[in-house]
Image 1 (spheres, rainbow, N blue to C red):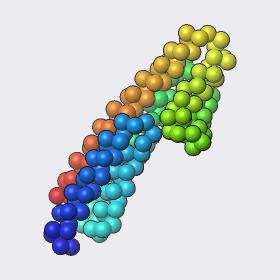
Image 2 (tube, helix red, strand yellow):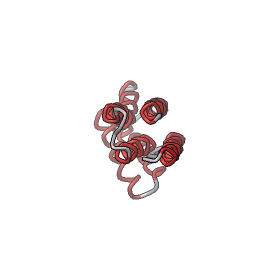
Image 3 (cartoon, rainbow, N blue to C red):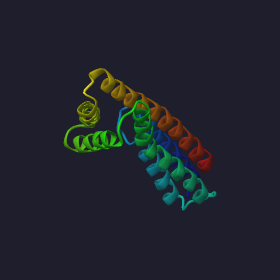
Image 4 (cartoon, rainbow, N blue to C red):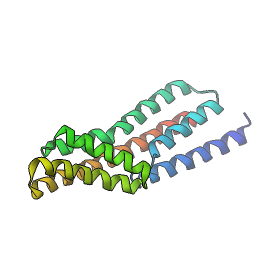
Length: 163
């Protein structure tokens, strides 16, 4: 591949990956997926040169951890404050369904409302239920930090591969 064209390709890919990373600030924006997808596209275009297969495997592993971190960290933090597994499942299902029907922001609200309603029907105590919802939000915050860190690591790993 022409060196000038390849250099331009790398800068365009890097810009897209940084956009994906910054997009993680918006809840449910698939920033990790965008970074991973651009790395895959780069690998296909360059025929996975320079040990690209190994680098792409590392990027895929980091992406999988990022994809799972949301549900794991949110659920773990809610469980820490006593949320039932069934309430967490209801919250995640409500969030998923409403993010398809409404905007992603609607999915977030539905997730929290679903958790509140499921836990309140069990506890019948507003203060305890609000603590569970608060802890799920804290878990969401931790998940963002983890995803942002993983996205940064993915971009660094890709940069080493590309340059």
